[in-house]
Length: 267
Image 1 (cartoon, rainbow, N blue to C red):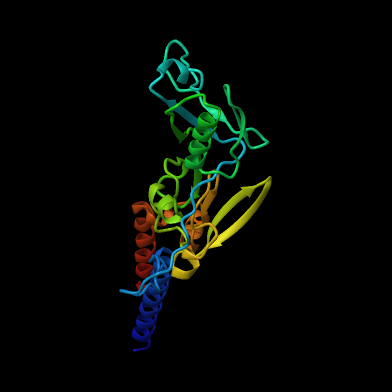
Image 2 (cartoon, rainbow, N blue to C red):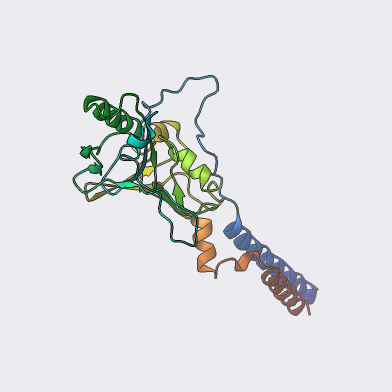
């Protein structure tokens, strides 16, 4: 009777140990619950949005500027010629905003554009052409030549992403970067913004409606850096040699160990 009790005790201890091992392993691999965006948003309730903020020009920005008119010969003076290396396709030249916030156009000279939108720059150039009686019917288009924002961390497509329109929100930027992975923290997204040589960090919780829509970085600017931190699960995986817990070999080894232990204790 005593031997049976000892035998039963060994089996019980082995089973308890096995259960504890499984609990620890599964708890380290469980999916975080805080993954839903805008968790407190209410249906049929209007949300007050910020006034739309168009991207404004800064020193270092590059612009494609084209002037059109019925007088084809005159407009050639204002449009930069295309460049070609000889082996590749031709590319339009662009105007670069200098450190004083100006661009230097033929005939028109220096034009201050810092702080203006691309549409405001187009209107300003058109005004200068008309005021100087250089063209009677000018049409001016201004397009961004190389504006980017950067997304790093737990997103589907990290890296440099081109800005092709006048406004881009943080949610749109994350979407274009492939959305957050399941391991990315939604409640503490970091946005780094540099203005006049000074960088300011902002934190945004996109699980909370008010925090997102009232953030100073809801509308991104060129050269903003967006960083999505890994959550605890991802950090733990890194500590355990990346994805060790997800490999079939790991689970096979763990199962073999537990079964061997049970057999050893039940002899």
